[in-house]
Length: 284
Image (cartoon, rainbow, N blue to C red; front, side, top):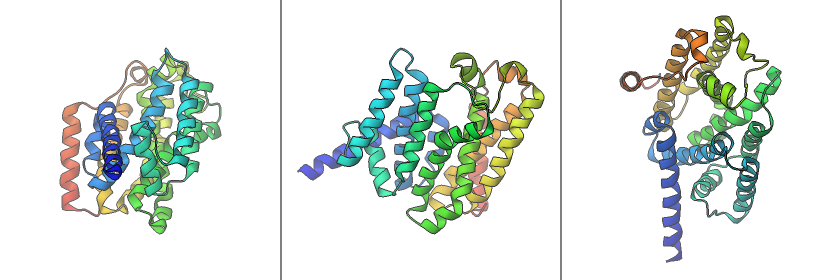
């Protein structure tokens, strides 16, 4: 009877992480449907945990963010020792961390970057920006890679750098997409020595060139992903490339005036084309 109860709770925990993913990112949720069921379940738990921390630092403006983040970190630490959490999203994440041997270092670095969002408003050097991106994005990519590789350490080591470059690429595209909100609303600048008043076409293209290099390096890794995760990652990769292309085609002054997005029709078209190409050549 006791075992059945914990199974019900586990099921609820993963369901809430799934619904969190669906609620906060329709694009990522759509791509996640193409993971195999076991991988998809674990990836949703990663997203749920990451989103929970991100919402604290980015959205809970009328509340004491530092205290909330402290409580989340403390609860994670205590729950890790106990092997269970009364926070369902955190509980599903704990199960995934244990099953796929996700290093504590990744989680600590992620929470450290989230804390930077409360304490730090600008990054004056490339080293500072790289350190933030490592914690906010690269380690999330590595957590996902742990799931994809299913404890195959040799494959994990082979795909380690491409996974980090993909995480960096996604994050930097988000930075460009969200320039207006990050800089004008939250007062944050994530690019090294960035000045919104001097953001022109040349600056934009320099940043995009750096992101394109990340994407090129990441592409080699996608080719070697296991079958159960390759198509979903490829769809996400194609979507972010499409978004970057749209930002590239948008004048710099417009990039800081509005949030650039890919419309639903083009998202669907991209999805269909990627699936067709993958079916023709799964080794892509």
